[in-house]
Each structure stands twice: as C-alpha cells, then as structure tokens.
Amino acid sequence: MTARRVLLAITFVATLIVSTAVADAQSGGSEQSATQHASAPPPRYALIEYFKIEPGKAAEYRKLEQEVWVPIHRERVKQKIIKSWWSWGVRFPGGSGRDYDRVIITTFDKFTNVETPYPPEIFTKVFPNTTAADLVARTLALSKLVRSELVEQIDNTTSTGEAQIPKFAQIGFHKPEFGKALEAVEMERKQWKPIHQERVNRGILNTWMLLGARYPGGTNREYGYITINFFDKFGSLETQYPPEIVAKVHPNLKFVDLVAQTGAVVKMVRSELLTLVDYVQ
Image (cartoon, rainbow, N blue to C red; front, side, top):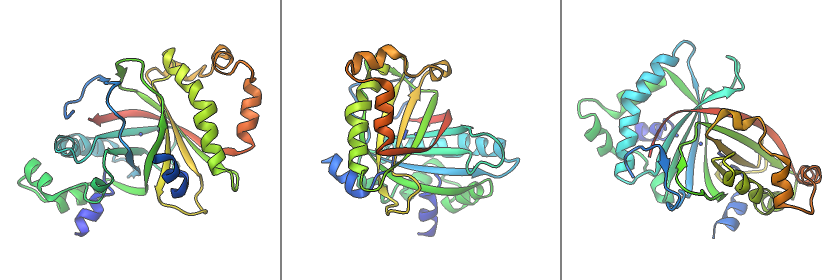
C-alpha cells in the first residue's frame, strides 16, 4: 500500500487552480502521434506534479524515465487508466536555485481512475522481474516530489483541424482578489478565451486551457487558478497578441483597458516556460 501511495507521486501540462466550489460550479489512442484529433474530447482531470532532479542526476533521470516509466505509462494508456502522460522540462526560470526542474502532467477521463492510478498488474505485465517498490526507490534516488495538485479542466480553445503536439507551454499562476474568484474565471472565459481562440485560428497558439482546483484547497494557496498556453514554435512567444486580433474580437474594447479590467480582479503570481521532453497518449 505504501508503494502505491508513493507511486501516485511519480507520474505527468497548461495549466489551473480555483477553489473547489468554483470548479464544481463550472463543471456541471495508445499509440503516440504527431497530431491530436480535434474531435476527441479533452480529458476532464489532470494530476500535475513538480519534481526536483538531484544535482548531477539529470541524464540518469532521463534514462530511467525513458526505459522504465514511459513503458509503464504506455500500458496505463492502453488499459484506459489514464488519458495521457506528459513530461515537461522547466526552461525559465533557469538556474540551480529553481524549485523544480520537471512538470509532469497525467490526464484522466474519470475521477475514479485517480484513486488507483497504478494497479499492481501494470508493473507485473511491463516488468515481471522487478517490483514496484524497487522502481520507486530508483526514482526517489534521482528526484524528489516538490508538490502535486489535482485539477479539473474548466475551459479550453477548440482546434481548427489536426493540432500538432505542442513543443512549448507557458504556464501562468493567477491569484484572484478576495471575493472575486468567480468574476476572474468568467473574465477568462468570456473576454480572454475568444482572443485565445483567434490566436489558435491564426496558428499563433496551439491550445489554451483553464484548469480549476480540486486538491489542495483552502484560502492560503499561493495562487487561485492556472492557465496554460501551448505553442508549436518558440518564435510565437515573441508577439503573442498582435493588435489586430484584439481589435477583431473586441472591436469596442482597447487592449490596455482589458488588461486593466483583468488586473482589477486577478493578479499574475508568476509565469514559467516549459519545453516538452516526452509524452504518451
């Protein structure tokens, strides 16, 4: 049982945390490929985990990830326990002083699958000559779990066709002003989502996601929700909001005014840039 609990902390983006009440109010294939089908419904839940790799152990960690955990995640997808698994490396902030080096996002279609994400038979099938406890011990020798959070997808943009697997993710952590969590989420959905959709339509953005918290909860969280912008090209990060996009979507609203309105209800705690390392879906 202990091994299974630890394993829950060894899995993987945007991007998103509001209170459980907000999330409840808003919610009512095994082969990898270079594209994602637009018709496939997005997964409802995601376990986001933040890992710190031990100094000098990055190459060993990556080798273990490729040789051990990717096959396990592939079998989990095959058995429909998880929808997908994504491993993202933190590009910015850089330096050895950052809190974590890896962001692992594991997605689920069903909330009940989160309870037992690693059935014992998964390990028996993939690695019949070793134990789950041994694999966990090898992983813990190379990295430590900084924190984890369970989120529920509130909203997202729609692909215009065969969406490419994104290579970069800009994850934003937002804290609504006291008593304005619902207002902040509605502004994201009604004001900003149409802008993000136009960015998708023009090929600037791959996908935008808004995720609400299930766990942990409480008023002492550093941030209230997360947004994730996924990009195919690094160059798209330079000019993310061409003036003509806002003018088309909100012809009667100046971009500077929209930013001011947003700042009155929610503050950006921080944003980070992630680079895709590996994935299974």
